[in-house]
Image (cartoon, rainbow, N blue to C red; front, side, top):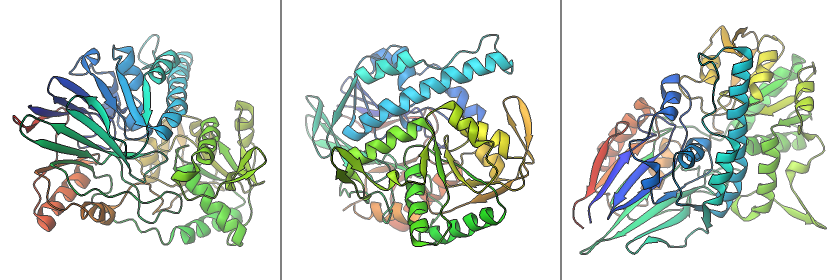
Length: 467
């Protein structure tokens, strides 16, 4: 059996995760993410894949973030009809994430058409709601730790990666005529002392390792998160201003609510109204209560209702456009948490459109901002940001809290790697910007003597020759 890999995404960038494995005439796509961030990257979403989607036998998904699942509707639109395999919680989240992503695609295409700021006479969405619904019919979810046969000689198994609800790293076993080989895909690894998620499980052996490097060159301590938030909230409170937080509805929003709830309960910060302005976040929160065994937040039952910190009286969910728009008129201390996390779309754009120019307000970034994203531009001090075809001046306070990332930092990546009994034959460093991936590859080479490769976009490699 000859085994090859082709890097269709997340190569020298943090988005668009897609890895094509070809083994014994089987074609397996590991993750199917959308590119985000720089225009150069976003345009790749419109490029034709170097493989006919109809020829792919199965797609294996590590977790439900859009940069890992967002291209699925397009893949199906272009001809894929095989099974999509993921964990149970990932399937539940996927239903929410993909339908929301499709709605955003359709709305943005329509908005661009109405405002006339697209170069196309009639802008089209990358995919539609119907495409997303077709994806969901192909999903076959599986529990953690179960060996799933893809063919007679290929199986996969999911292990908890601790990144978000349902997230997994994947072990692929290949049984050749003479020997068995193992490929491990880290997916996105979580943290070892996260207040919400359990730590990543360990694995001891891999012939080939594909590992993320989002923070391959950084250490992000978590110990001072509350102190940072305390200072920022008091500053905004004294300014009589709102705090607007771009945050992904999945993962980051729940962590922020956990911290704010805890600090308000303990009297460390004033008790302020918290508005979760994302219909998706409401549904995601329900899943945190349904999948209570996958995280540390206490879930109790009161009659037929599941209850948690998300049911606190000062937490409000904005279900409608009207309730969302009404937030823009509030000129007193409140906390608004809205998607998307990198300010690439969603309701956060409308909040920033109104609040970036207000000197009393604060925009708080609580997560990674990809190169080329509006979030990165604001964080790096741009004087104005283009939104809805207009230049919006940035006069608000721009703040950042460190240590909230759901990604393992450099020290935690090394901690996870230390579980391997011996070095893999080759370790591919992916899902990191060039500087981060290169730094982590060099660290593994020098510290552990491992053979590392930082693959290029669309690069192909032979993993095993005749096993």
